[in-house]
Length: 113
Length: 117
Image 1 (cartoon, rainbow over the protein chains, first blue to last red):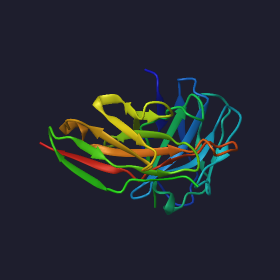
Image 2: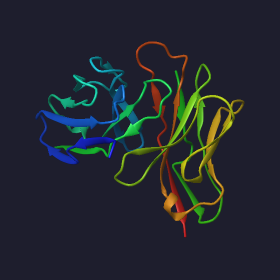
Image 3: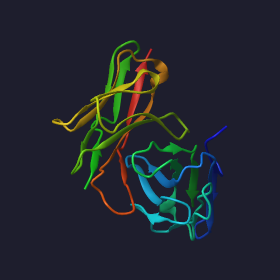
Image 4: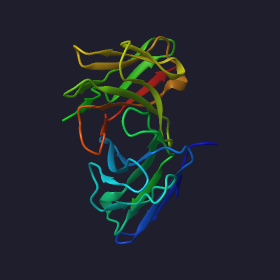
């Protein structure tokens, strides 16, 4: 079934540890995104990629990094996790960056202690 | 800067009654507008979008939204609510006047819809 998968589903992490959240799509979409969802704040964009080989910073990029080595995969790395990074993380993709609908993965619930 | 507001944190409606979830926006140009729905422990799902053309947009699950440029609104509506419509609804806006490499989509903070049997 076409769509976006994310792994892990949930994770509890000690502060200071490194963590990579995985995201894979099989729709051959050009653009991919990482959001965090926090109560009362809605969705905030962390990083984006308009096409394979390019990435850019969103609204809240500090403490996170991404790579886009190919069309399908867009991992998000927390180099040294802090408690304020406790959140639900959603990966999304769209055929084109501009007018197209975004398709979301099921999310990763991350708790940093 | 573009922004979107969902003035109601929660909307309660009786099953079978019409429902409205409100959204207002602010952009410098003509907006691209979206509605998404999120069910518990799930990612967001696309409902409908307005890019250009007819101000009344029809989407999935019987939902529709009306683009009102003078009121800068894009309210989500459904003629008859179902209990299964209970979920979190997000309005989103993109300003096509934004230049550069990032075509930013701004999401609202969400409105929880509760349909009461």
